[in-house]
Amino acid sequence: MSSSYTKAVPVESTKNVIGGSFKPTDKKIAVVVARFNFESTDKLAEGARTALKKYEYDEERFDFVYVPGAFELPITAKKLALTTNYSSIICLGAVIKGDTSHYDYVCKAATDGILSVGLQTMVPIIFGVLTCDNIGQAFERVQDDDTNKGYEAVETAIWTSNVMKFIG
Image (tube, rainbow, N blue to C red; front, side):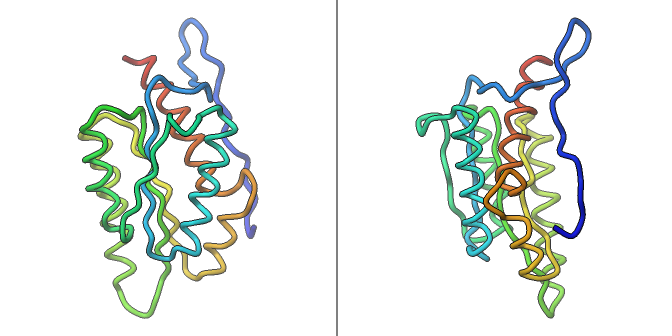
């Protein structure tokens, strides 16, 4: 990768600290995957499946939903959130800059929409959408390890769901 970073790790919960954890949640997790730029999004989905298995989610504890592109992620996430069946919903997609301003509109719509759904429903809606200048940047973010952004989105979903459970 072109830049290095340190992954976030949960803070242990104590009497007056809510830190979250990677313990499986009470409800299922939904993963919504955009099929546009499927070479990248399929790898994001693979990373998510790997993390779900690592954190002891069997196939009865998660659902994958496929949509055409990143623009459709927010409405699908909202419909899933309103069912109240999920502790969190992960949105995975890849928007890669082209020669027109379409990239800007899709990125803004996906970002604003995903944020809005979480705030409206109070269900953690996790932003796992790659917004890249080129396909090379996308492939850097979907490696077959725990730096895969789909993998990281699952960690974020579990951790945030556990925090929300403690808050009530």
